[in-house]
Image 1 (cartoon, rainbow over the protein chains, first blue to last red):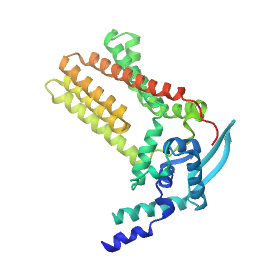
Image 2 (image 1 turned 90 degrees about the vertical axis):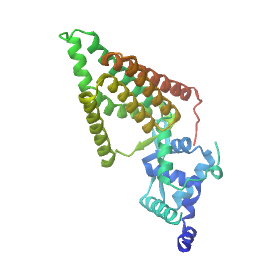
Image 3 (image 1 turned 135 degrees about the vertical axis):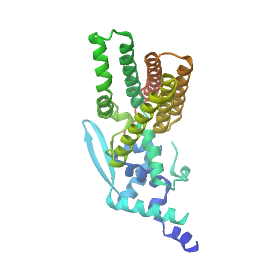
Image 4 (image 1 turned 45 degrees about the vertical axis):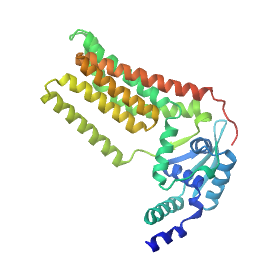
Length: 98
Length: 211
């Protein structure tokens, strides 16, 4: 039990933050989504979401592509393989410990 | 709007994702409008089979349409919804590409449909009042599926309404054709109105610009 609970200390802190976990979980369930979809689904403020997306991109967990659909600017986000692996590891760690 | 500090208790990312994607998918009410229209169409086909003479062209067309149209309409509705959202609603609901349905989900759907068909066949063959059981069973199963797949309060309410309507029609002793016409027609109207209200509320919200 002690060893299991101690594994919580190894949890990935980038993912452990609830807002980033929500973004990663959402992106894991779809192929890709734009900023507005994530903004409306998570109900985070735009500034807050933007900061969290940048941190996830820096960690290599998501890829962000800025593009246009007609006149509409699209900031497309998708989970990378590294992000998917990190999310799976996070889930295993939490499940094993709790 | 809230910031990240208020978001807690998210230990199962899959459950969080399912709930959020589900909520986002139904945010504009379009899926309900599509389902409502399909229910009304089914109701119309069934009523045509009840009301028209058996040897008329209308009756034969209704039988054919009832047998052949629901599956393509159901499969095509996903594509139509996606097109409508990307063409007209992208500034309101955002852009998302969903993952294609997995083999497990398709297998589960086929197994569920086969099980329901077997159950209906069993009821029709062995029950003492098959018409009543079919109406009550369809209401209960349909309502259960709506509530299970929708998971949102308005879908659960819609499911309860369908189950109650099926039970009421079974006790009222109406014929099978009229019973199904009322069951699907009423459920179609309820679903259409529910989806319409959600859609109108979305359209009335001001569009936020910038990211």
